[in-house]
Image (cartoon, rainbow, N blue to C red; front, side, top):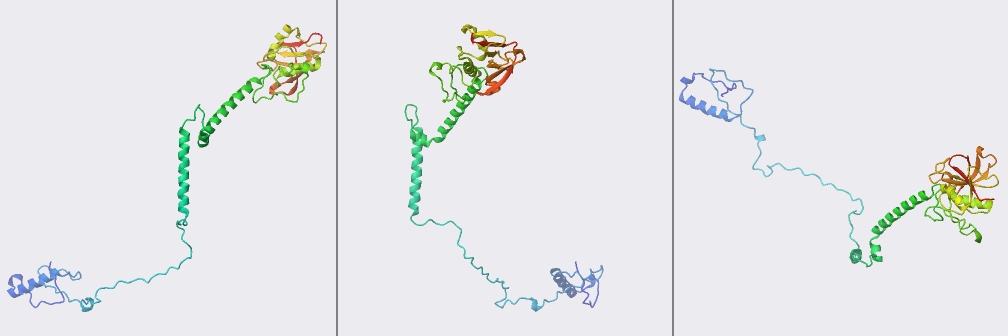
Length: 317
C-alpha cells in the first residue's frame, strides 16, 4: 500500500499512463523505500486516483546512536556493595568428634555386646538335659519364664477361687480340710487330749463346725457323725441320738434345716438352739456360723418348727 507524504508537494500530477520513464523510475525507488520503512500511522490513506507520493524516512539523530568506536560502548553492569554479617560468638551445634582415645573404648564395648548376644543365642537354643532349662538359659530368656509363670499363677488362682467358692457354701462339709484362700482354724485354739480329733473332724468355718463345738460347750458331747448339714437328720438316729419336730424341752438341741428350708442353701444348715424352747412355735433363737456367707462368724437367727425342720440331741442331755 502506498502512502502520501503531505509534507511534500508534487510539482506535477499526471496520470500513471502519461508519466515519463524517469518519473516512473523515481517513483518505483521511492515506493520500495516506503515499503521497507515503518508506516506513519498518523498519515491518512491516499485517496483513489491521487498520485502516490513516496515517503522518505527521516535520518536518525546522532545522539541516539551508540558510539561503537568507544571502548565503553557496551553498557556496564551495576555491582552491589558487599554486606558484612557480624559473628554471634556462639560455637557450632553440629556433631562433635569424640576426643582422641575413645575410639578404642567404643570398639571394645561393641565387641562385648556382640559377644553377649551370641552367647545368649547359643544358650537359648542348646538343650540343657532332662527337660530342665539351664541357669544361663533362664537368664537370657526371662520373658518366656515370666509368661509361663504368669499363666500358671493365673490358672492356680482361678482354680483356688472356684474351690473356695464351692467348699464355703453353707452346709457343705467334707471333713477337716484346708483349702487355699479359705480361712482355717487359728493356731491358738487349745484342744485337750481327750477332745483331740472331735472338734477338728469338721470343716472349720462351716455351720457344722460351730454346731459341734457349741453343743459340746453346752452338753459335753461331740457330734459323732460327718457329712453335710442336711444329712444330720438322717444320721442322728443311727448313732442313738433323739430326733423330733420340736426342740428338746429339757436342754440344748441342734436344729437341722433341710436344703432350701427357711433360707438354707442346697446343702442344708445346722444351728444350736439357745432359747425359745418353752414355746417353739413362736420361734426359737439359734446361734449360727456361715449364715448368709458370714464365714466363721457367729449370727443369731430365729427359726420356726415346720416342714423340713428337725431337732436332734444326745439322749439324757
